[in-house]
Amino acid sequence: MTENRPSPRYDWTLAEARKLYDQPVPELLFQSQTVHRDFHDPCEVQVCSLLSIKTGGCAEDCAYCPQSAHYETGVEREPLLPGQDVLSAAKEARGGGGTRFCMGAAWREVSDGEDFDNILEMVAGVRELGMEACCTLGMISAEQAGRLAAAGLRAYNHNLDTGPGYYDEIITTRTYQERLDTIRHVRDAGITVCCGGIIGMGESIADRLEMLCVLAGLDPHPESVPINALMAMEGTPLESREPIDTMEMVRTIACARIMMPGSMVRLSAGRVNMSTEGQALCFLAGANSIFAGEKLLTASNPSENEDEKLLASLGMRRLRDPAASVVGEP
Image 1: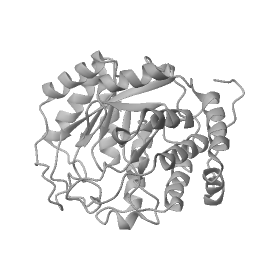
Image 2: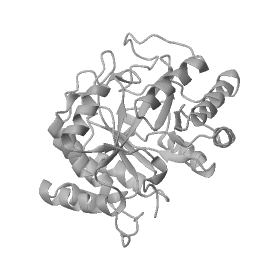
Image 3: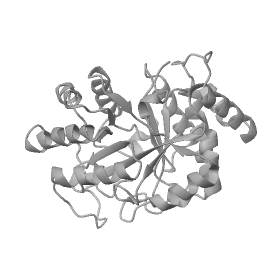
């Protein structure tokens, strides 16, 4: 990390992003790695854990999601997990070296009441374990964001999924502006923002870059930017999509790193379809976080043993103290 690093920008244009993306890969990775080293230790990776605390039956019609009630995918509707089960999973994740524990619930929006009160207790419990607590619960109000912050929530995930021009092809039950409103509520409550998207859903390169421009236009930038490759799930409208080419993932991550230099760029869903070499290129492009565990909500993910072998083969190490990492704005 350098002391004289450049200041982040919030005025990236689609033309500028496309110029970045279209560079020869050696040039693009040299630029993204240079930026990465200005803000982060290039050999450190934050390992996060994600648990589905309420599965299935979601009222949204997201075309990629097997938890949507609109599709027949074989995912059973399940109630909110008991708090003790969630905290046991968090302890296990901590024992495996995890520093952030993310809790995901398949809701369009979280409702006040017993379930929300139980989630507040889960957040407090995760924080007592010395871990960062993260939630993704769908849309939340400003008042709910404030209550989550008071409970100790460190981060809230609410992805844009894709660019605004392609959004209606993927989701019709929630508007793009509603997603941005939730992000604003999270930010105003003092919770850090985790916001990214999915590539490989049939969108154009311009759609992907438009999403990155929206994210990079947020001031401050999201502290966490997950980049997911579509995991085509049986029963969803996108079930026949082929896995995206690894180099498209690499280029997208590199652009995210350059455009949002202080953010943690998370190499998220889709790693199970990538080789060691492909994942290494993603780290070289600027990714510095992964999710551990054999499931990401309902999607497959590499095992912890595979991840240990991956990091060892690359000579990389887990980030042990998230507070020591340079995230957000300088």
